[in-house]
Length: 372
Image (cartoon, rainbow, N blue to C red; front, side, top):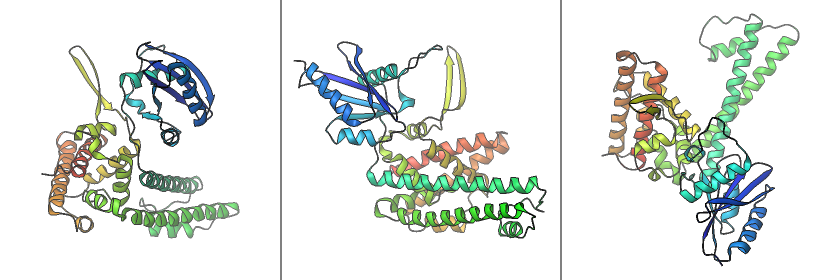
């Protein structure tokens, strides 16, 4: 009878799982199995290992975050299995130019990371957070489809020499001009179908945005959303998306850790006395990173210290300490953006990403009550 901990690495795919067992005492992986993508097969595998190691054995299972989301995690934890989801960007990997990658090796690597704790676990959202996150991402998918149909309409007009006399597209005047075009043959039908799709997507996004406002007004989100919208460029969709994607901000010890989590910190390639700064790591949550970069673009417009009527309306109802903290952040970020672009001749994209990184730090401070 053994009284030990067995680390079960699982390389999971849509159609199959590859699993293995690893113990610190043996320092190697064994009992490799490839099975159907079914959690019941994993439970059977654990029963098989229990007959080998004894009933007193403890299992720690893990798999990389990927296409399966949190489904397998919930299925195993519901059966009292200790399961972890590993963030791929934090795992210890073997660095080799001629690396051999197989499912077995990946399962063994996951098991070793579990044993050595050389990884960061993925945050498991609540059911409500998960549902809200999926709804917000669905809305963004429709927004992307709307962007594509706009490009297709403009491309159609360009190919057939329908010239619009202004550079300001998708205004009411521009849309009225599109509807007034007199095309011949199938061209008229094609343009009509394009515009029908445009109208349908526009109406759907407006309806989804109203629903997002309702979700943000729920008690669990209302106060946090109201606080985050005190920043320039951060409206309900961005604020709510950040909250449900991140979950608990207190799991990050510092603001720098949070910025690193969303991949907004610069990479580094150092050897000996040489230190080379690279572009941002782009590790972690891509969705939050894109949202913050989009918000940071707003700091490149307007005067330093100026507060629009819309921003004042979003700030209304918050505590005075929260508004003062947000105002300091807004002024600093706008001043810093202009200094980088106009004073230091930095490229706009470089300055925008730098502002997004600082904006993330200010958000962490507000969500963890570090606003003094």
